[in-house]
Image 1 (cartoon, rainbow, N blue to C red):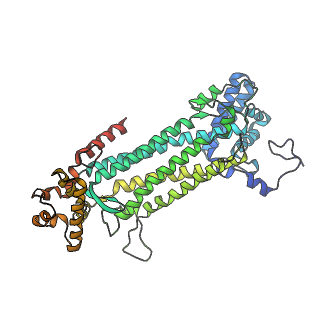
Image 2: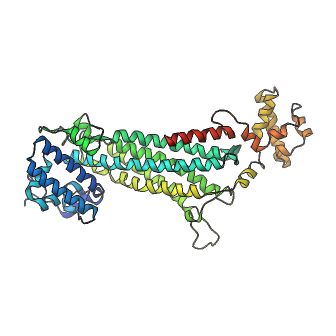
Image 3: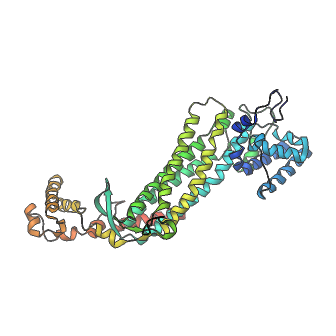
Length: 460
């Protein structure tokens, strides 16, 4: 029995419905319906201008596609598994509306360059939205950092109190991470902004097409220089998933700290009720669920990156059906990334900073030990010797339950006669932070410089 597939001229047997369902991609690639129609409109206008297809036929096709476009916007289109993918669904609908002339639309084109074009267009439209959301987060970080330049908190290494720092400095560290994320997505735009249309199946076409015209019509800056590469390249999608994974890693790290900082053990921050949930059994609970969800969704995005890399790793040139597996992970990552950024920004912009608790945490520890070692070094004691002296004082403090600033001057002088009364000023956590004037350091002046530079970058 002859099949009704648009490509079925040489086939005598028809696949079972469940086989068709397995091979179909319409369940997910219908998300590119808008892009598919845009690509077809650009293609037929090129066919008309070059005279490859008669002008009257092209006018019918254009009118038909524009009608389908309006129905798509109105939510009136229905797609079927029998037509496999978004390309054949749109062509089938067009054929139903204008008749056999619709078949001329596919002149000098293959589904291979068609799907690649749709995919480029899809991602090309969404990258600026992601970049805008990152910028919004950066602006919130700058605003919060500006309010907390002189808010003192413990800085950590190995999750142990290390040295006191400015909370504004901490926030600006994440600003820098998101700045790099934005740079990566901006570079991703360069590789996405290339038109595969006109590469046809893999070898180009004998028709006198104008690839520059279709690229310009679709808003691409250039065309692929090699037709084999055009239909088989998914670097731009791998790059997007890689960039998204790094971004989600940054969000996840911040959310991990959100979850710690709001806990009873730390009490550095309090999240807005709007971004937390309660317990079904414990009335007192206020859980940082949104932060935990963002942290959890990072694994989802990582999985999509690994999946596409595994799909691509053994593919011979040029197009293979495996490439049907390139889209769902990207679609899901876009669907994950945009709300994650919005929710994260909402948490950040409404957080309550408990500055007193943060500072108190730096006054009941030994995070000022480096200050005492530096103090001795400025008095001429070799730093390694100073390090040993202070280590012994810390050990004594642990044994006697005293902080360094609580020890008497006579006790300190027993450790080193170089220590004088002025040491107590250096041991204050706010002084320890303020004095760190080295470029990029946590000193208040340096944090303000970071903030001013960040404002300039955002305005540019």
